[in-house]
Image (tube, rainbow, N blue to C red; front, side, top):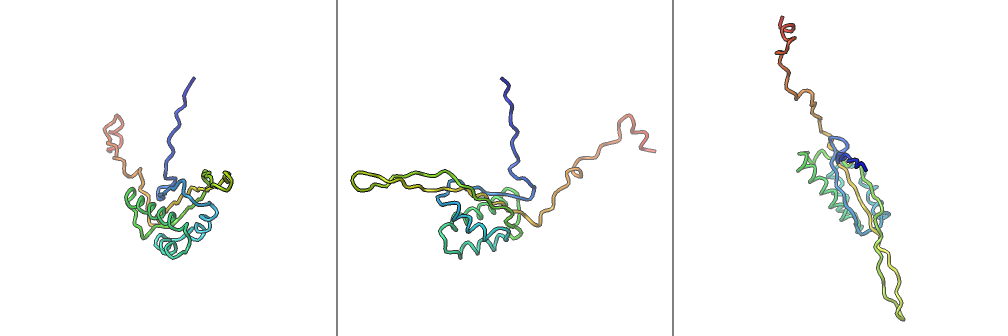
Length: 151
């Protein structure tokens, strides 16, 4: 049997994006999407202000994820927080936790606690990619055809 080794995927699809992932957050995906739709495409500072002033319970975990993505951008890539924009936001349903609630006469009812997974990607709008071809050292003309290029 031949084992095929799977290549590791680059966690940053483009060079100017960073992301943060929150898994198994105890809220329904529908309630999280209600807030996510308000912050998609906005700047980092504007997003923090919106999330602090919204009266929903789901704002706090999303606020922590946005803050964590900005910390990843600052620490891992050296981006400036003033130039960050929320480029992609995704909310997916997670596993449903099943709990039992005791009822009368020894019975119990099933309580379902939905969870969700939230992914937030930030993009730096002032990022300029480095041309790797220009960083390579120049080759010396010492080969057997080097005498042709001198004259």
